[in-house]
Length: 256
Ligand code: NAI
Image (cartoon, rainbow, N blue to C red):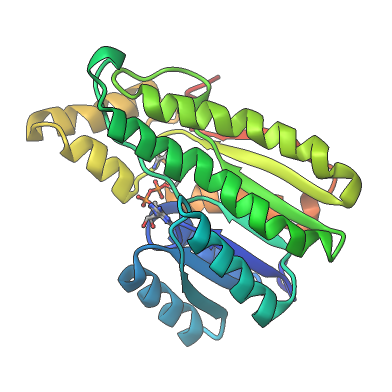
């Protein structure tokens, strides 16, 4: 018996990395997974893989930073499933922008729009689908970058720090309605997002970026997306029924 049997789960940023690993795990555990992303091609591959393994998943296009796009996702889910049990707000972007005086305004706006505003919008429009059921689990994605600072990435630091506290605000707002809200704070996880950060540097610096991250991680390696997905599964399932308002670190010990 799967830990998410009969549950409807929405995963944003489902195409690659942590989202993709979570879609596969949630489906293996019996959930019907709505895979919401801007990247249709990669999600379709995952959806086909899930279906070939006997699981249930579908792709729905959504740009989490766009209100109209999110309301159309909510309408689709309401018409198709009526309500939902789990929302994993995982979609996110990250890019170095330099120190604040040189940081491009457009980049700052874009990171806040996708990472922070996106988490607000999907929560705002999908929460009513949990309220109808009187239960639910929302899992947001913060970061160790929401707790401590990174050089040249103040936009990302601001967005992720915002998500940590936004999570707590939602947790107390909806606790009496049976809806739990937590976040996961990953350390450095091997995903395309890390490729992008490392790749934006010269090749030699890119290698150094990975080596430096391994070096500062007490477990001595980068994380695997499945290791974050495992925590999302715990928070999505009834096994975490008395946990709300928490920010759970999955970082190989960096913040210890
Ligand atoms: P990724 O780049 O593999 O995945 C991000 C996903 O979000 C992609 O599928 C992308 O298409 C989607 N996406 C981007 N903009 C979108 C939009 N406007 N609307 C809908 N979907 C959109 O990266 P990764 O690493 O799997 O990241 C997942 C989450 O984990 C992000 O929120 C990221 O900030 C966070 N995180 C990742 C860490 C890492 O080391 N990889 C560390 C800490 C946090």
